Length: 235
Ligand code: PGA
Image 1 (cartoon, rainbow, N blue to C red):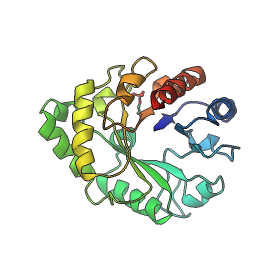
Image 2 (image 1 turned 45 degrees about the vertical axis):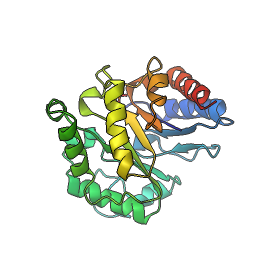
Image 3 (image 1 turned 120 degrees about the vertical axis):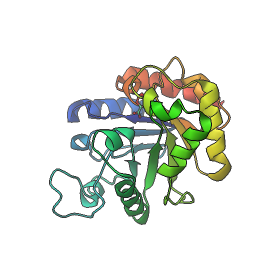
C-alpha cells in the first residue's frame, strides 16, 4: 500500500528536512510504502528506510542541457532520486504539458529505470458525461505509455476533486479503478481531496492500492496520521 505526499509549491528546504525526518522516524518499521515529493529546491539525500522514498514532482526529459528553468536527470541523480511524478494535472493544465511531452518524460524515466507515478484524471466536463466518457478520456491519456513497465504506478486523480475538498464518490472511484485494473497489472492509486477523515474508506476499496495526497498531507502531523490509519488498514 502506497501513501504519497505531493508538496506541490509548498515547504522550504528547512521545513522539508523536518517533515522528512519526522515521517521517517514514524514510518521506518511499518509495512506501508511512503513517498514524499518536495519541491525541487528541497531535494537532498536523506537517511531513509527501504519503504520510504523521496521523489521529484517534475523533471525535463534530458540528462542535462540548455533548458532554462528546468531540472534534468543529472540533477536528480545527485540526490539519488528514484521516484518521479509524471503527468500531474497541474502540469497538464497550468504548465500546458501535452500528452506528447508527458510520454517523452515517461519514456525517459523508464529508460532510467526509476519508479514513475503516472497521473491521469478527467476534468469536470468529461466527468459530467458519465463513466464511459471518463474511461475514454483516461485511456487517451495512457496512449503510448508502457503499462507493463515494472516500476509504473498509476494515480487516478479526477481534476475536479483535486484541492477542492470534494473527493470523488467511493463507488465511482472503485468503478474507474476496477476498469483500469482489468488491463493494468500495476498498483493503482486514487488522488483528489484525500484526508485523514476519508483515507480509510478509500483504502478499503477493492481496486485501490494507495493514495496520492496534496493539501491534507502538507502538515506533517496530518500526514503521519494518514500513514498510521493506512498501516492499521493493512492488519
Ligand atoms: P489534493 O491534491 O489532495 O489537495 O486534492 C492531490 C494531488 O494533486 O495530487
